Image (cartoon, rainbow, N blue to C red):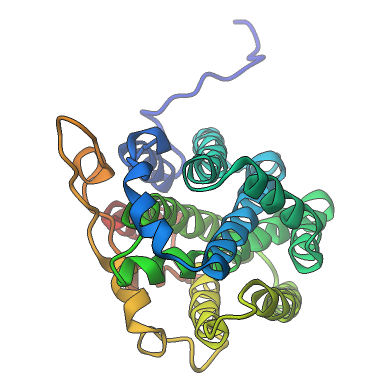
Length: 342
């Protein structure tokens, strides 16, 4: 018998059922930006003031940078620390979709903006102090952190930091504007919901293997990081939305999603006003509305291809793993939760 040099992936004999559940969920909701008729939003775009158009452009520039970071460095860093072969496959899927997300914003730019405006957007993105600080803080952890620290940084990025940008298209959707742009954002949010839940689950598996002292040390580090990121995000949000009256509402939305990120990691919420009822109901309505079904013959929308995009419920994040529970039981519980994510 020859010794095994390289092990074939056997999806019929899994170490963690959550890997398969996540793979099936992610592949079932596959999408591409080229199937969304963004040009249908041009009439809405022309009704926005110059300030509003600038805010939208900078919002999507910032989101492009974060998705680029996640696709080029974040997932690559976590791939070095996977627990199972199937987990590696799931991360490969996540990495590809993060590239799809980043590319989608360029599709929006090429539809709505002139070449000069696009140049300005990327110049602003590449030189904004607080946006670059955000990327540097997270990437330093990807490059130098422990496996658990990398997962915390990733969950904070996907479940919290993106939402200063997501607020804008959801706000316009709630006001019946830029519906096709919002379709792309809702598809991205749907992906990020699964990414955050899955990576948070993998964090919890490792966290529960720590001693009590190491758990406390990790929690202190985690909350310190959240405070650091929140402080920078407040400055970023103030600059991003300068000239509008949205800043406070965006910060409330951020606190809501920061609590969601902590729930993904199995930790206690931090912000007392981080509840759904504290968020602008127009934005919450936008995030929970099903996708638009476009004309099947002339234009195909994601409502036709992928079904409904729905909001995450508080219970979807309630996946805390008990120290005395078996891996199998925990996996079965999250298997059902991931299958329910829309």
